[in-house]
Length: 303
Image 1 (spheres, rainbow, N blue to C red):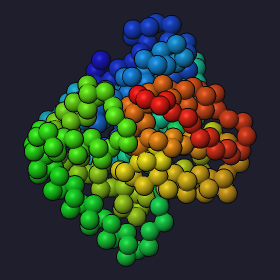
Image 2: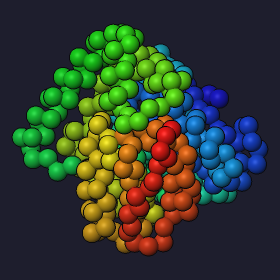
Image 3: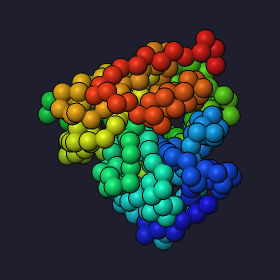
């Protein structure tokens, strides 16, 4: 499906199109990580097909979403506007609960979407996008290193068609094997992403103003929040999710759950889809009533 918005022709998929009974079920809006289309959520959606309505979309610059004649700014506010337009178009959160789920850099967008849609959204879930306490000098150094890495990666991205670099790319993102179909999808998404969009999204996470706004958004959410992390994440240090959990626990009376997967990496939804879906079912669709809790989720022996 395609939604014409001020910023783009937004591609989205809504499980209620296939299963009309989903219109009356709780809705989950999935917001993607860096350089990814919405396709990698499909295994999770299949696992949750009896539990909820699932909506995915391709943020501008990725996947099947199309630019207008002029590219829009690649900002958190802009991406949040796309998601909000979709929420309004589909009337999510009107007749059934709306759960907003953001993965990796999509977590920053999800926090802003939740702030804008507080009247409709019931819970916020952040996957693998914690907070960090950098000093000014260290932050500048991290920013320069990350910016240089992303620029170099985008310049050489065609080389990632080669098997060794493709394997290195997947290994960086995962701690356990994922289906080859989704290895290919991740690589295809990376190869076709708009370079300008990828560079912007990949570097804005370390800008002090954006980081502070993200932290402020998360700490001020007076609604159930679920934090999901793979302890073997090699992309974004998992300690950031523990820091976020402790900060939330210290300042918020709203329920906060930290769900840890000891053997998974940055893509738990692909590394062990049944376990990830079970965590979603238990802690997102049925949010905790206690103020704060930690859950260590057991994964299968073999995926």
